[in-house]
Length: 122
Image 1 (cartoon, rainbow, N blue to C red):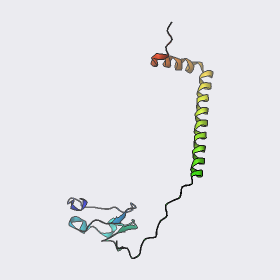
Image 2: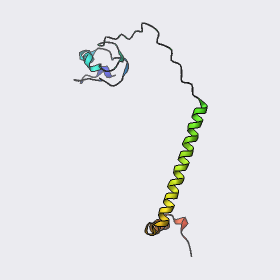
Image 3: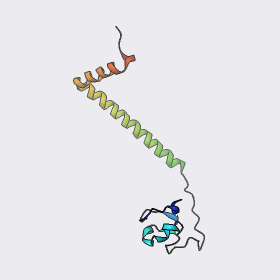
Image 4: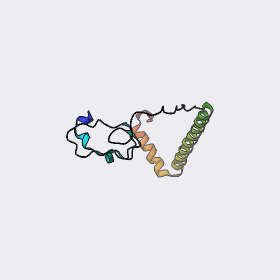
């Protein structure tokens, strides 16, 4: 357990957005000051001034309600934009190869060498 480490000389978890109870104050953890935990407003326990025993019940948090219509519309937008981007990129490559004979020949040479089932036999 972390508390049983005996080789720590410096311990700081400052400004890490931690929450919960601080480690027990025994062994070397008893020597670390409040500044080791500063910047974590949700930490509680010694050496901090915030107690871990709640004085009142925490407010109930309602789970977010997902709207299937909204999710569906985002999925539709994503699929159309993905398909459109794919189509534009594919056509861009085709036009580039059509207009540039050097890269067109290089492309077909590469395909002929590295994709054996596309080789023409004759």
